[in-house]
Length: 339
Image 1 (cartoon, helix red, strand yellow):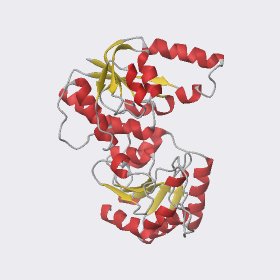
Image 2 (tube, helix red, strand yellow):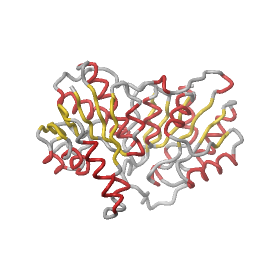
Image 3 (spheres, rainbow, N blue to C red):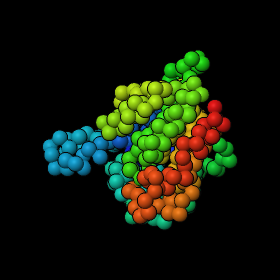
Image 4 (spheres, helix red, strand yellow):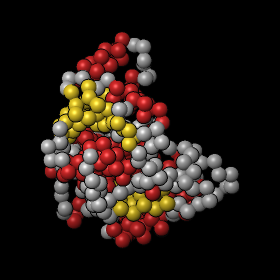
C-alpha cells in the first residue's frame, strides 16, 4: 500500500505528523509513504524509517513570483513528479487550501479533514473521504487520529513515537562535552523570551560549570546570541547551521531550553530533555510532546492571546509582558530537575 502525504510546512507541523506514520507502519506493515513537503524542510521526513520518496514543493517561494517563467517551469516539473505514481490514498494532513490544491493534482483517492475539523474549512471540498477530528487537542494527537481513520486501523494507546532514525546523527557522551542548547529564535516577536532573561539563565548555568551553545537562523538572531555571549563567558555562539547540523547539536545536548519554535519539537522528537517556554501560545495544543518534556505556560491574564505582537498596555519590566511569570530562576529549577 502506497500513501502520499501532503504536509508542506512548517517545521513543527511536519514533526507533529511523524508519530502518525509510526502508528500506521506498525498497524499496516506493508505500507510505504511518499511525502510532499516544502523544499526548506524536505530533509525532515527522510529521517523517518518508513518514508520512501520526497517530492519537494516551493509554494512559499513561488507565490512571491507567480507570473515569472521560472515559477511556471518549476510548477510543471513538480506536477510531473507528483503524477509519476498512482497512490492507494492521498492524505492531506494539513487541512489548508494550499495543501488541498496540491492534493488535487495527484493520482489517487483523496482524504482529509472534514470542514468542521480542517483549519480552512473549504479545503474539505477537495477530498472524497472526509474525517472528523476534534480541534481542541494536541496537534500530534490530531494527526494520529486522522491517519487511523483514513487508513482504517485502531488508534493505539501508546506514547507518541516519532520514528526518527537516530543513527543518522553523530553521538558523543563525554562529560567534558556536556552542554545546554538555548533555542531563542522564533517567528513571532511575542514568542521571544526577553533577552535579559536568557543572560540571567546563562549565568545560572555558568555557576554550575555548564556551557551553553546558541545559534540563529538569521542575522538578527545571531546578533542576539552574540550579545548574550558578550554578557556570559559560558555561551558559545555557532554560525547559522543546516537542519542536519542542528539535529546533531540537539542530539548531543544535556538539556534544551526553547521558546515556541520548530527546533523545540525536533529536540522532543530526538528524545532530548527540553524546557519549552510559552507565552502567547498554548502548549496544550502545540507544546513539545514526548518523554522528558517540560512545557511552562505563562500564567498571565491575557495568555495565551495568540497575538503576534504583545499589546498589553501596562508597562512592566520586560516585554512580552506575559513572560514576567517565567523568570530565569523559574526556568532554571526545571533545568536542574532534567539534569
